[in-house]
Image 1 (cartoon, helix red, strand yellow):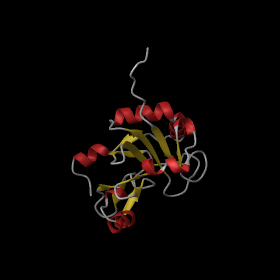
Image 2 (cartoon, rainbow, N blue to C red):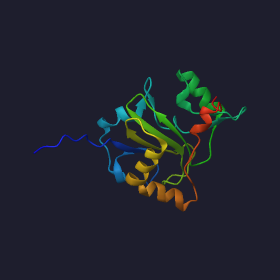
Image 3 (spheres, rainbow, N blue to C red):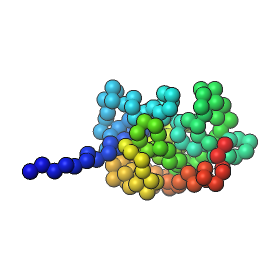
Length: 167
């Protein structure tokens, strides 16, 4: 007898994995094949997820923004130039047009302390913050342990966008 079961959604982590450099890994750090990465690591008109989904504050207005919000390359570069990284652990939830939901934050606790280090959890489908955090705990516990050891808490700043705090 065969059961009709829906496969579990694919889940990935993009960021530093215990050493400098950004990598796309599967649950518990299993490496992905380079050819399999493109659909998960880009969205929109080919914008790469590296550093484009983590929250920033515009330097002059303090409005919340993210680089990937820019519709053109020029707009994205302006946001990158005029926006400052939010504190580590503050994250945004994004439903991407590549079929994944993402939470993304600035993170210097995963093996690289340099500027622009960021972490992103990707889960196939449309999901809530609670589901995304549960997926992070289940599939990437070492990432959360590194944050906890450093005293960094994951804090959802997405609701601020709904209150008009977005640039």
